[in-house]
Image: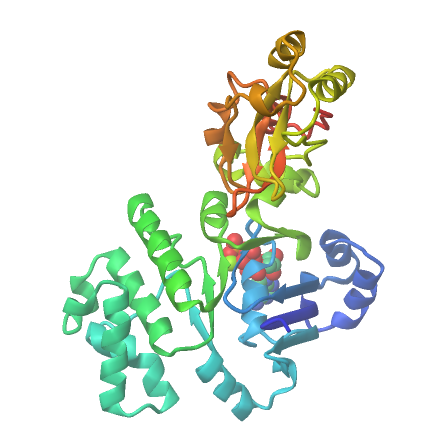
Amino acid sequence: MSKLRVSELTKVFGSRPKHALELMKQGRSRAEILEATGQLLAVAEVDLEIEEGELFVIMGLSGSGKSTVIRMLNRLIEPTAGTVELDGEHIDELDPAALRSVRQRKLSMVFQHFALFPHRTVGENAAYGLKVQGVEEDERRTRALEALETVGLGDRVDAYPNELSGGMQQRVGLARGLATKADIMLMDEPFSALDPLIRRDMQDLLATLQSELSRTIVFITHDLNEAMRLGDRICVLKDGRVVQVGTGPEIIANPADDYVADFVSDVDRSRVLTAEQTMRAVRRTFSPGDKPRTVLDWLDEQEFSGAYVVDRDKRILGVARDDRLASGLRSGATSIADLLTQDYATARHDTPLADLAGMAANSTVPIAVTDDTGQLFGVVPRARLLAALSSEEVEVDA
Ligand SMILES: Nc1ncnc2c1ncn2[C@@H]1O[C@H](COP(=O)(O)OP(=O)(O)OP(=O)(O)O)[C@@H](O)[C@H]1O
Ligand SMILES: [Mg+2]
């Protein structure tokens, strides 16, 4: 079961949403609906399933509906239609008291301009969410300190916000969210007011926290590189609708439309795309007992100059190259076992293309992609690699 499940979530800003909803159902655009009804369709029929422990990024241009979506998750904005389920519980059906309780226990929110109380210490600020939860003072202090230590501010508990830099203040905001132990953190452009270096630090910090604490995080950004760095999956919104959901590499490799393609055009493909998106299945492998003639005939037919030779567990033993096979045949070899060379390169499924580029150069066989146990499960031919790096969606049969 998904941690958070959103279906057909919709928001119309305006006092008469009914007609707007009808037009939405007919697939009319935000602009058309505004023109026809005067109502603003901020979010339209958004479906999402977010898994436990996932860092899920929502991105899109300004006005695409990101903040409206995230605020409907905890009903800071009431949905016009659609449902939000958290751990199978319908958030949209809760009465005010139950909603308050779910927000305190399960959902914490970190905003772009995190409002710290200037007259309270860092420790008190970090503990604020706990006070709202009704946690005892001693425990508040302990948990706030723990959270501050996690974000590297353990020694600043007694400082006041104005004594901290912007980046540190944002860390206090993060600590406040962490201290509540809420399973889900909703983060609306939490780092966008920070300067680039601090921002980078915060991204690293969040990534580390995420891997250690495995909270479920919904994170909004309009910085694609931030999205790629942090997101397990990314959802792209356009005019209130979801245009694509996928991992960063999936989206870059196959943008759903021109809007998404435009978005991802600035990304360094060689760093984001990996062997996994670029490889193809191995056409055929051979075993050491095979005859040189068999392999040569196949190489001829395929117009390849080498083939992988593997053991019973599909682990690579070497490469059977056409020139070696031919000379082996002339000297009477009956199997390929003694004719193998070791001139091949291996990569893992998550090796970035940038690292593959240098490997392909002198080899007669495509780069081998192997798993943890050394099994061969795919290859990246040079032509595919070059096509993937050159950004166009080229179908190569290499
Ligand atoms: N309270 C409101 N009343 C009327 N319209 C609103 C309201 N809040 C948002 N909107 C409109 O809804 C649309 C989506 O806004 P939203 O704030 O969700 O976008 P966003 O993707 O978060 O943008 P940004 O990147 O600028 O933060 C926009 O057209 C916005 O003008
Ligand atoms: Mg916003």
